[in-house]
Every structure is written in structure tokens, then in C-alpha cells.
Image (cartoon, rainbow over all chains, first blue to last red; front, side, top):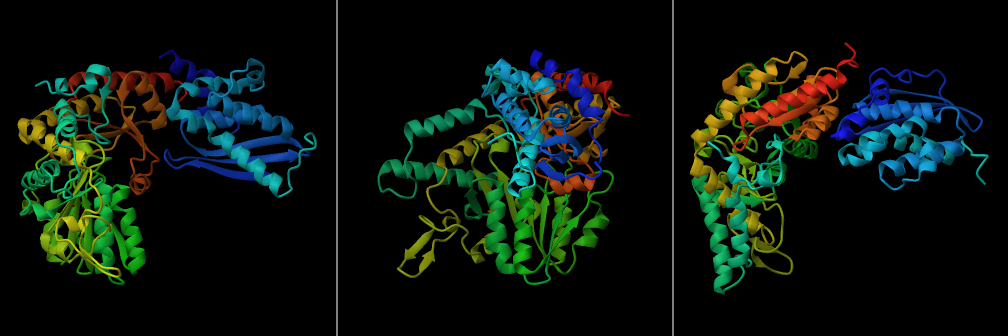
Length: 155
Length: 404
């Protein structure tokens, strides 16, 4: 299957097996655990904010190549973005995986995360690809409801 | 012998189906029998005075007799139909466990149990203040005699044991466990879900007090399960589910219950499933367990030999071949089983990956999950070759990235 070889490409392999984003973060402002009990995948996401900009993120945990790479690539994509931009990227990524968007101009905003596009053809792996993205969604939502994250750019 | 031709799915799908431990494919004979039931005999059994209902009742009850003979139960009243092995185990936990366990009693199960023979016992022991204890496996993935004698004591009231592990394929010596447990005065529940597709079950020879299995793993349709229980135990137990057909007299404030087996079968039953299970038994008996055993043994031997040669695999199975059934769990060292399973799937090889509803066993083994290939009569050496080729491909894809 061509899809599969395309999916397990260099970006995904490198990020899943040797990610520089997989580390403990000193002085993180936010931390959130995400897990898929069915597969035993578990990640801890950490995030440091500078105003409404995501200054840095890191993760720890374990799981399949798709879940680990997806987490690492997500961190690369969201680092340096405002919360507003991050939320849009998260939405587009989830829609791409769920086959709800094919809008090329939107997909461009995903940068390297577009490497996961073929996961949308593999229903069994959708959960793996979305683990980190749902986890960061939860983290931002909690931060907002606690008043610790506010998005200056969206009125 | 080519059994594959009896299974229509293999005419429609070009796959190496190696997930019979999850559910078996269905022979034409079973599919046809169900169709015939709906075309000729469908009515609600036990309800009507008209001949069609009597016909449906006959088919339903004749299958009960057939199952009693199949597992050598003393009486058809000892055969209760359920949805699956899980429901059978819940019935025992609720109707026997809750009423017979007292504070500080022990329930002993093995670390190899499927969640279905584990979670209900957590519930019941917590409710009754009794203890849940585990028999652990040794480095050969087997429960040693010492372990059995250490854990089953005079304080043990219930022992739950899987006949064959759905992860390691270990065949447990249930006959000896039952003998020892009976000496200590405990009641033994055998989960035969993984064994009954592959080996003759004789409840009297085993001495089991309760034995459960799902039909769908032994070629029958999904959604039909069996509970065997000794009559004297079942008679003393309260009903599990209440409703139609399990009653005798219903008054405004109280009810008397039907006798066995109806006492435990509330509501309209899965007659299609029962009829299909009857056909599955006919199919198995037309081949014979000796031939099934021979076929499975040869295939598993072949697979073991091939897989043991791949030094990048971790294999989770006993070296004692006579204690190993038709399940092989494996991991490519350093690669997550879900990735392996996806790559295998892309080559038409169906294996399961995950924790196989046995999280405590995974934790005991120090892993999250495994890939699992399980075999049955329709599998061939070509299926094994496909499996090996696909594993080799998966390894090659990951080889340069694996952290040694």
C-alpha cells in the first residue's frame, strides 16, 4: 500500500524514534496528561507561555510511532504561535485527520504536520494521531477557564 | 486438509486471518443454518401454542441438549445461554459470588485472566470485603505447582482460571488446579473461551464447577455464549437478570422463579445464535477434535520455528510445546505493536495489537502491549509465510530508526 510507505516517512520516523522535543521542561506553566487506554499510549505535554505566545513545549511518555511523532511535530508547529494561531492549527489538523477539510490554503498552515494526512485513510490509527492534539486542546481549554490563558487577538 | 474452502469470507477477502483468538470466521454450514432458521422456523420459543413456535422451541432446546453432550454435562439443565463468556462470568460473580463470599474470604484468579474474569471479581470482592489474590506466572509463562499451592488455601472460596491464555497461549493445568482447589473447599470457574475451539472439553473429567465460553470463537455467530454450572450450584443461586420467561408465578409484590435452565434466561433469547452454535458444533464434530488438534499443532510448530529465527522479536510463549495452544504474542524490539499491526495489515495480514483485555498481565510482563497472531483450522502454512514476510518488512522499515 503506497499510503503506508508515505505515512512512515522520514519526518514521522525521526520524530517518533529520536525526538528532541521529548524531554522534561523546567518551569512549565501548564501540564496535561493524555492517554488512549486501548493501546496504552500515554503522553505528558508541558507548555511555557510568554503573554499569549506559546514560548515552548515538551513531552514525555510512550506510544506508537504515529502518536509519538504526531506529538513531536505538533510541538514544532505550535512553538512561537499565539494561542489564536495555535487553536486554528489544532482545528485544521483535527479536521484533516477526520477528512473534514481538504482546503489547501488551510492545510498549508499545518507546516510539517501535513505529513500525517494519510492517517485519514487509516481509521484504526486516527486516535494515535490525534492524542497530542486533543491533549493540547484540553490544556488550553483548562487554562482559559482558569483565566490563566487569555487570547488578546480574538475578540 | 483444506478447511479454508468451507469459509466463504476467504473467497471474498484475500487475507491471512490470524485473529481467531478475537473471533473465528464462520463456515458456510453455520451461515446456511441461520438463514434456514429464519426462512423456515422463526418464532419466539417457549411462547406460542402454535406449531411454528414449537418448532423454534425445539431447535433452541435441542441445541441445549447438543451442547450438554458436547461438553459432557450430566444434564441439559446445566447449560445456560448467555450473550458471551463475559456475561456468563458476570452471572456467576453476581449470583454466586455476591451471596457466597464473606468478609476476609479469598478469591484466587490467575494473572493471565481476561478482564472478563477479573473485573467482576474486583467488584464482588470489594462489595463483600473479601480478598482478590493472583496466581502469577513463572519465566516460562506458566503457573507453577508451587504457586498454585501457595495461593489456593483453606481460606479460598472461589478460583477463576482461564483454560488457555488469550495472550501467551499457555494451556493451564486446570484439572490439577480444580483437584487441589476442591481439596481446599473452593469452587472453580473455568474460562474455556480460548480452549474450546481447539480441544475437547469434558466438564465432568475436569471436575469444573462452572465453565464458560463464547460461541463466536468456535465458529458460531457473535452474541451467543454458554454457562455450564453444576446443577446443585445453579439451583441454589438467585437469578441474575429478571423478566420474561424466567418466572413461574408473578404477583403484584413477589415472584417465584422458573426452574433450571429458564431461571437464568430472561427475555427473548438469541435463538439465531443458539441455532448457529449448534451448526458450529456439528461442523467441529464432522472434522473431529483430534484432526483439529493435529492441524493446529502442526501450524503453530511451523510458526514457532519461523518466528524463533527472527532475533529482533520478543516472543511471549512457553518453551514447553505441549503446554502451548494456538496463540503467539510477539513484539519487534523497539517498535510499537500498533505500528507493526498497521504494516502487517497493509500486506493483508490480520493480527491483533494491544493489551488483549489483559492489562494486569501486560503490567506484570513489563510491557504495554503486544502483537498477537492466533491460528485456527482455516489457516495454512502460506498464512504463516505471509506473516513472517510482513514482519520482516516492518522490521526493515524501522530498522535504521530503532534505538538499540
